[in-house]
Image (tube, rainbow, N blue to C red; front, side, top):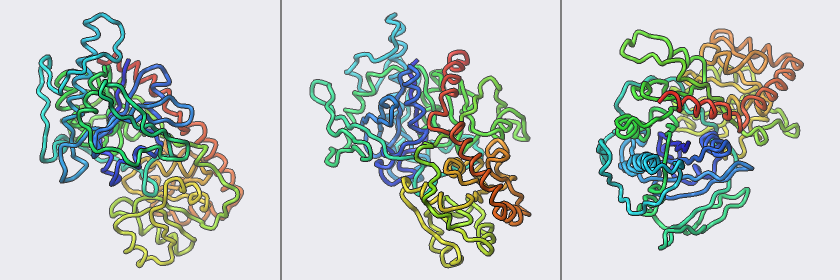
Amino acid sequence: MNIIYVQSYPVYHDTPYDEPFFDLANRDKWMPALTCQKGFPAELWAVGDGPEREDWQYDTLPSLPIRMFPPDQENGDSRYHTSGALNRAALKAWENRIENLNDDTGKPGVIANAGWTGKTESSEVAVDVRRQGNAGKSGDTQKSDDAGKSGNADGSETATHVRKSGNADGSETATDAGKPGGTGRSTDAAGPKTAEATAHADELAADLFVLKGMDGGVGISLANEVLIPNRIPFAIIIRGEWYHSIIKHAAVVLYETEWQYRKLTRRSWRFWRTVLDEDKLIRLPKSVDTRHFAPDPQIEKEFDVMVVGKVVDGHRDFQAIFEISRRRKVGVVGGGPMLETLKNKYPEITWFGAVPYADMPSYLNRGKIFFHSGVREHFPLSVIEAAACGVPPVAFGEVIHEDVIPDGVGLRVSQKKYLKEIDALLEHPERLHQMSQSARRYAEKHWNHCSTQGAITGMVKKARTNK
């Protein structure tokens, strides 16, 4: 089975350039790389400012091909940008798969068909390339949590990758070999090469598409214009949005929390929403590199409470952070449009602003506990990053449930009594030490960078039976 993972958001939705996307190592790339390791050829597709092909390498994981496609829009909300080039490539990859089956080769892998120009006669659906507007905006959506970004990025460590350029004979030449600890990107790379990207994608055959995130325009456009009309099997990884009308067509749905599971399998007052068959669902663990995010006994615990997250309105309870700072020493890591305003309003809090992601463990280790004051994020990545550093995560029990922060790993506090509960934990060093050790052990066992292996196996099995 050949599997193509697709980022539902353009890479520039969270960062202004493509560079950080390639440099950062996180579940977005570990999961498809682990898929390759399990014997299922996989690629990662994304939409960026220029189509290109790179081989991404991390640690001992297999090399992961990443393909970039140009967006259809230049303006408007980037969340809803689409890519007709990606849609056409996906349709062709599926047709290649069918062609292989018809040829009775038994190998739905790479085939030669370099003359394809993005048009197809065998398809029953016309792929609409939307140049303007918010194509991904349609459909019924419901917000459950945000991306859970830490600092100014969501990933882990620097990875090695190799940029390749097309030659006249169709072969590829490596123009820049990455080295561990460096970006591995060419500094004098040429501009967008649409023909090159099309030629690369033309060779592919795909059996399954995995949409990483459900509410981005790239993923919604791909599903509505290509996957659903052509009955192409696809899976969805739930992230910020937990429901969209495309979900009922998915062969597999990967969820992160029991809260999401209940919402998807129980009927609500929104009677028009499809209740999903439990057999379609697989729980997908979070992932962090627990070798990078680890306790550091050399760092002084100078803050009672550390907070990490974007400083934007509506994402977290800043008043709660302020109330804690009136009795405890608090440090906040994260940038955003409200940073300067809050700095002036709450000078007793230490505001670090946005910091390089590679430095995040050193900031987390400066706190005795980590406090997640989010009111919309049901499973932020920062919770497991703190736990991996041995910094017990604390969050509102009304928002974060036991399956996210189990008893003993951290503390779920009441929105009415959180100050007393936090004080009680900080005033008992032995209890705090035991919780720190438990958090670290739990992260190593359940949230390491290879934690998605079981979900990958289950996804492939269900995709074969739930078509």
